[in-house]
Length: 160
Image: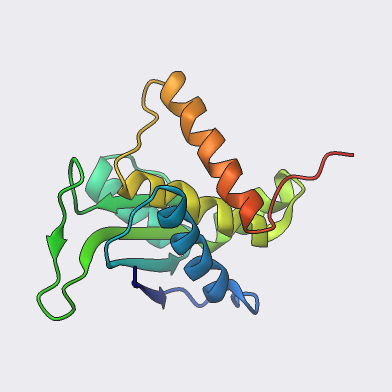
């Protein structure tokens, strides 16, 4: 499996910490490995500020407020478009608010590194067809998978 992760930083309010792009690539690959996704794939990840993600959220979901991350899957039921130039399955787009990631990392006491890792893994699972609209069993399944992947990335929550 080859994975192409295209990362764009479209915001200039906050300097991305060193290693953020590598972390995102590792999180994308770890999610695909955990999910036994063996095909060549590509995903686009864009870092934005709160104002930009608010525009996306309003335009695509009719929710006029900022959020931490948005996922735009290109596949359905395991069927994905193929990039004719690379022959990779195009999984979709992930949009992460850097401002939200920093705030949430501080709020939850685990910092931006784990937060960006979590948001990436969470979105990758959405791109692979997971959902948590019901807030019940599906959400619990996603949380279990997220934590398993984050643990493999060395980003487990440490309990004292």
